[in-house]
Image (cartoon, rainbow, N blue to C red; front, side, top):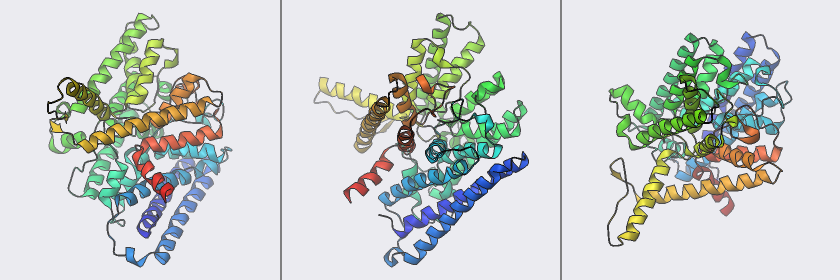
Length: 493
């Protein structure tokens, strides 16, 4: 199950994770918050030491037959990604757990898993500890986990740790598990570096814009992490509303939209100067859904006379739709107070997700597009049984294996959603909260309706619900199959 190649890769991943914890302590040092410097540096030391010990163990006890095996199998890659993410969440929770804020281990694990999977669900708030009460070091680490998870910590390792030198393609496909996990360049390391180069470039550019619009440097960096990772962690309890700036809100809308767009399209535009966004069928549908849903919410709000007919109302409508559609979870308004029709739209958006090849969660638009086309062609086959039909997306014929994979993903997704919602309801939680908490966890969204609205938190849930929610976040982030392959292998063995 765990050969030397797998253990070596995971050990290097832990060393890398421990090293990137260190800069967070600098923020506590800068703001003279000395209590949590110890917690962050001790967490870093534990993580790095664990990685080194695992590496030494692997080197001493490695199987000689595997010494000359250069490539990983697909199952090995799935194991690395699943176990790597799980251990990353465990070690990433140490700064919270060892801090002076009395986090339980489950709460710490929930917060770190939410950060790494870019879910944005949090236990911080009025029922536990307000976000503003945390030290700047912990707040930075909290947002930085978004940055790591945004494009995938495994892809990040492939790009920056040439020591791995093994199984690059398999790891990339396991990490980027959507229907379009294609390489931009022939070499997987180069692809990973290009993806992360674009990702980091967007983060830096957005940070500069935020800073010039009036945010502090700290807030600018943290909110850029949360935006480009479509995560949603904020340094303030009121989220983006805290800044009370229409310019900041529009900037956030634009970058949320870009973050949920296939990064291959960004690469084509930035490297070749070709604007091919609207030639992509999935992007066109993504754009139209965003505009249509925003106008629908806008018209619903003004019809019910909750808001005036003005540009500000449209901005709030547009912001909320983009935030939920891209699975980011930032907020400018308490949409729980909106009319039922708008709430129904918000609930639907919890399942949609952005485009494949982006940092977003959810089902992804390309899968829904494929399923609806499949249903249409099935109806045509019933009407004309002898006809020959091919399913195409973007002018290309879709392979039968991809169709079966997508249908299977849909069934898995719905089953997990229903099961977790039922599990939550068994703990005397109302139906709306149960349904949206389940959809939010597996869709990596963060806020929902009921007791987990945009200005609520998850601290009131029992430890068992938080643990299951963390598992759902991981399933959603790795798009189910990656985790299920590993689990099924363990069970069958």
